[in-house]
Image (cartoon, rainbow, N blue to C red; front, side):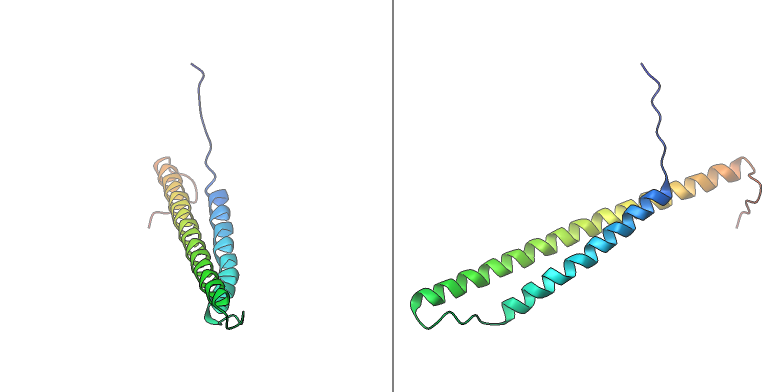
Length: 108
């Protein structure tokens, strides 16, 4: 069996977490647009089909807003996990360095 190894770069993980934050912030614009659109009643007319269309549009807007909210929550969860993992690896690196008496390392 071949020797398997891997390398973790906490800085890269933190960069990825920052990109996820950018994505979360980017979702705000379409969510705000959907909320604004949902708060204004469309003017399709006074006939029954227009009322049905208006209700269908409102339902679609609510569903899209809900889905974007779920995406935002999922990205937030991944960002939190990524940040936690990066910090854990950084702490492990510091602990190992302290164990070897790395120059310049100060406990405290």
